[in-house]
Length: 131
Image (cartoon, rainbow, N blue to C red):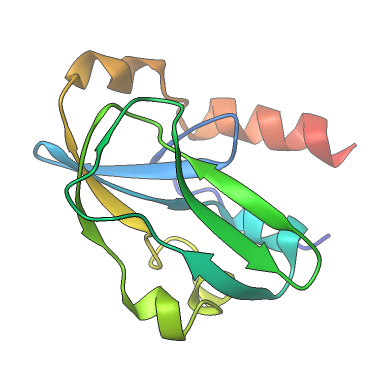
């Protein structure tokens, strides 16, 4: 397996989502590790803008030639934007997983950010799953 990229400036979940917070909005995508596990991504099912979601809800489904995986919301809030570009070019997640965000969530409970993993804690999750 190639080296996994885990940027220090992001937060992570144990289910391999990344979170980038900007004010009260969080961009969410899947990690480099997750896209490597899935291999060639062929389809992303995006949620509706305006949908209220709770932490742990399925917010998207990503299909690859190998499997279909759910993407879970790392935070409670409202979906304020979806990355429409992924409808026609889902492979962008394989090419640059940390730029190809899937949804942006308006955060309604900022305290939940404390439950997200930092880069070193997420690195430990990846290490365990890699062996």
